[in-house]
Image 1 (tube, rainbow, N blue to C red):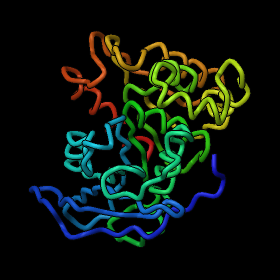
Image 2: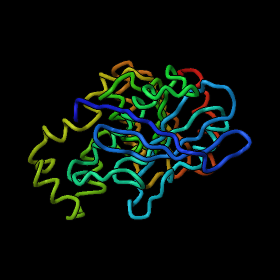
Image 3: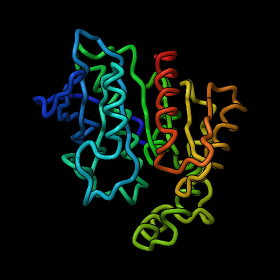
Length: 278
């Protein structure tokens, strides 16, 4: 992971939408040399407001549009009085392209999420309470949350993860990369396979750095998730608990990857968690 990470130049565009409680804006910010696009919902009123950065799951970049992936969460959280910055990540929507994103295992997305918090703090926006910044990530964005918590402890004051990918990168490679030559071949050529280069794969797996976590973490996972295994979250929570970290895992019986019937309950729990920790 790149050690020098800067987040600067947050630009909030004119409102592109408005409700009774918030306005919706396009934004850009700098993550090192990359310009990253996104969407920001800003509650109406005086502020400053606690702020949440949202990290979406995998969506094909050919069909992705800015702010896509966590729209209902954006609306829900803004209605609860939170500024919401939904980052698109590099290579998505209006963001700059990183030609090496896949061959570097998409670790640049982690830089983009860390940079979002730093850009918010550096922005000088009077609406942003820079002492209260949290993160919510789903699926791939959940895995990014693990990375952020270990690479940049205390960057976020609280972290919520929905149906996250595994904190062991070999699990993710086996699930989504190994049987896809276009994905697997350049990775193996550059870094070696998990069997041939176990030290490398251990080195990029967040679970091997859970001792560094200093943020409270809440994980939501459905028992019927066929995309990301519940066992991955159970293992991650157990590993964090072994280091006496502040982690809570909520398991939702019968809930799938997308969260439908029990989504409202999960969001209520998330709001309470953010209220306690931001």
